Structures are given as structure tokens and as C-alpha cells.
Length: 364
Image (cartoon, rainbow, N blue to C red):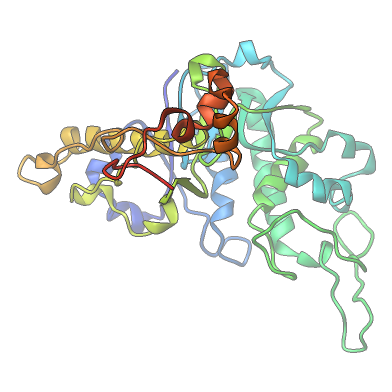
């Protein structure tokens, strides 16, 4: 089906937005909720806000919607029906770290106890029936705001006398007298977590009594080891939200906070050397991003710009990958185990002797 980009923009931001970037593909523009919403500033509001506006103002003709983050790459087709999608059931990945808060009864701070079994550790991607999305999206935004708006519901707050501060909360009850762990490694105690948006979905779906079926392996981070090709049952989605490596090569989106594709400067990401099987997703991530940049530069940039004349990079640097994945490779080679497929794949250097003084990708 068609792909629609959801773009958060204030009027001032939209007026300054490059026209060429709007031509990348179908784009739905909605108000930017990152600033001064719910008496704070956080980009986490834009994910639920985006689909709330889109499903209401530009509803799709298609029955099912796949919703993914901007830092994700599709490796191939995803068939929602084949995965089990239907009206009244949302499909999503098991974001297991959310179970930390769910098991600590974070949902019961906001919704009725009877709804808590419907609170599932869903995240990263979702497949909705369009009617279910229309039901869930507004409450997704609401609960994101509720979680971010009052950290006293999960962080214990002490008063001047040293005793836990207590007070009313929505739906009755009191603020917590003991911390509820959220499973967020990037938040400091007392702060609202970025993953409030993820918990917002958890609460909204449970409140609507729409169950979520968790899947495993549809998405993998770009540093996931030994992922099979998509055609062989590997992940359909690559998430490059963190860091990945091909031996000493390192790639992360955080190195490019000011990257501006519309400037048509011709920037590409340096390709890695030929990866080992356990680093293949990292190399594939860089390759796919460079292919997309190459396509944009050729189709959208002026002919006299640096980008139009830039040579698109190869998928990888020339030269065979040559290293050992296992510490005991030398011993296995001495024992004559290189005839075994799994040993040969993990012990390329010891089994083939490919590394010499002049080998460009020899790693000792």
C-alpha cells in the first residue's frame, strides 16, 4: 500500500520547510505538539498526535495501517492479514522492557484493575484496523500526557518532613509512596520518561478493551547479531535508533543531529567493509540509507548542486571480510573442524587463512 509521512510543523516551521523535502513522498502535515503542550515541551507527544490528526482528517482507504517510526527501514512487504490482523485486534512487537512497569502495576495507577490484563508491552511498530486506530489515537495522546504530566504517580516524592507526599490522583487513590520502576534506561529519577508515549498506547488500548497481540522478530535493531535475510524469514523492519558496528566501523544517527537532506550538499554515510554475518544488519542499514540519499539527490536536487554530481557510494568497501567470531577458532581449526558449516562461518580467518599482511580487512 502507499506510504504516508507524518510531519509535525507549526505554521512558522512549515513556511520555512524546503519544498524539495515535501516531494519525497506523500506527506501529511499536522500541528507540532513538541512545544508547550500539556505545559511542557516533549517530542514524544507527536507520535500519538500524528496518527490522531491523520486518521481523523485524512482517513485511508486501506483497511489496515502499519505505523512505524521515522528511524526504521522496511526490508520487504508486510502482509497484515497473514500476520493475523483483524478489526478489534492490534498487532505489535514485544517491547519487553515495558513489562517492568506493567508488572509493577503502573497501569493500575491510571485505569481500572479489571482492564490491567489488556495492558501489553507493545512498541516500535503497530498494525491497526483503521477503526481501532481512530478509537485509540486520541486516548494514546491523553495518556501520554497523563504519564508525563505527573511523575508523582510513579516516583516517590518526599515532603519537607521527609515523609512521602500524598495526594489525590485521577480516578481516586494517592500518589505513590514507593517508586515504580518504568524500564527506561535513559531517564533519571523524578523525570518523566520518553517512553511515556509507549505506555500511553498500552493504557489507551486497554482502556478501549482492544487486545494487542505481541509478535517477536518482525523488527530488529541494526546491531542485532546474525539476522537472516528478509527472504529467509529475517526481520521485515530494521530499527536504527541506537548504535551499530562493523568491527571498528561505527554508525549512529546521533552523529548527524543537523543533517539537512534538502541542502543538497551530497553527503553520504561512509560504507563499512564487508560485514560478518553477525554485523550484516548494520551494513544493510547504511546501504539502504545511502541508496535513499542517492535517489533523492538525483530526483530532487538542482542539477548544479553538489549532490547532483556526487558519486553514489558502493554498498561496502572492497575486500573480503576476514576475522574470527569466536575465541576458540584457532583450536577448532587445529582439530580439523573447519569442514563444519557453522565453524567455518564463525572462524573465517582461522579456517581460510585469508588474512595476510596486505589484506585490507584483516582484523587480528
